[in-house]
Each structure stands twice: as C-alpha cells, then as structure tokens.
Image 1 (cartoon, rainbow, N blue to C red):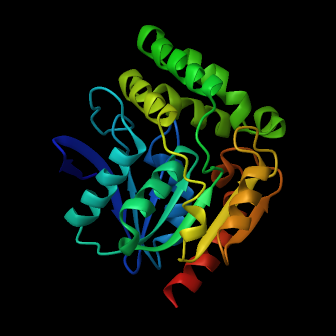
Image 2 (cartoon, rainbow, N blue to C red):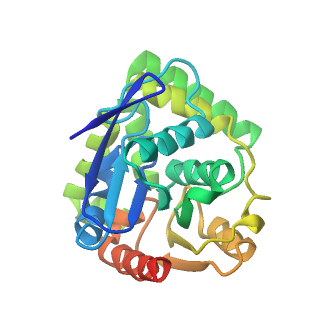
Length: 265
C-alpha cells in the first residue's frame, strides 16, 4: 500500500487495474476499504484509485479544520503524483461533498461524476452545531459514541438484523478512524459551501445513486440534483440505506460499470 506526501501530509491510497482512471472517495467516518467491492468489479477494465482522506484510514491527520476544498486539493495533487491528467470521480456522502468541491476547482480534470448518497446543500445552523458537538465528543471520548449513534442511520433495519458481517465491517471502519481526523472533517463538513448553484454548470456525464431507505441523505436530495444536472442519470437502489455501495454492491457495480462504459466511449 503506497503513500504520497501531499501538502506535508502522508496520504495512503490504493492504485489497482489499468485503463481509464476512476477515483473513488469514501464517506465519513470511513476509509478506502469502503470501496473493496467496487475495486473488485472495476479493476479488470479501469485504473481504480482509492485514497484515505486526510485523517482517515492510514493517512495522517492535519491540524484544525479539514475543509472539503482542502481534501479536493489533496485529490488533485495525488492525481499529479500518479500522472493522471483526468478521471471519473466518485464519492459517497462526504466523498460526494469532496467531489463537488473538486469539480468546482478542477473542472478540466473531470471526465465524469458519480454522486452516491450525498447532497449539494450546506448544513443548517442546527446541523452545524451538532457537528461541532460531535467533534468535541470524538476528541474527548473517542469514536465509540459516534459509531453507536450513526450505525442505525447508515443501514436498513433488515441489514442490521440479518447481515452481522456488514454491520461489523461498518462499525470497525468507524472505530478505526482517528478521533482528531474525524473532528477535523466534522468541522470541515459544517463549514462547507452551498454547491446547489454549481449543479446547473455540470457538463460532464453524471451518475447519481441513492439508497431508497437512506435516512441521512434522502432520495429527495438526489432527485433535486438529478433535476439540476442536465443529462444526469438517477438510480434509486431498493433495500439500501446510506451505505448503498455495500448493501447493494452487485446492483451498484452494475450501474457503475454501465456508466463508465459511456464515459469512456
């Protein structure tokens, strides 16, 4: 597993397969292993890059707030290191916030977008206050409180009841996150820009996917993105919550492969 020194921070990443580049960006508070099923499905025909964002997985943390803009700049510099001129960028949840920030800054480097279980609008004042409290708790108490609070919102009740291996995998990812990395990202999400107006300027192929039962970024958010991004495709994944790429991995991968075929052609 290689590292890249970006802005004086060691960023861990995986680089698998060959062909057109696809960069997949994990959500909060996960790491690059979120995309294991997608790597398996895509790396036979694409070059799949999966970084750990700063403060997550095996990447180092930065001091202060880790903004979405800062994370997007990390991705651009990683692409420079890997000599990737342009790529299809995909992100789930917070990863989608980073993808939109990347598009705003580096439009010429984007061939296509995949926005999964995410949204363009900023936090409400109440949500910002909640993230600040979460950041303080992460630093004071560690990740267990955050993991226990988030887990029921990430997966469908059926998955929680019948797929213990998935539940364990998701919780293990959250528990392995550095509290300081989680806190920095929480503050970054609270400070993120409203990207709603950006949507109408997107002129690259765009795939939007969302779990039907997503309690964190509901289907309505994805429908509104679909309406604003001309020519975008919206896929609603049945029997899936917020982590739809794991709960419905086969269907998610099928849609992703079909979309990438269109982007490359």
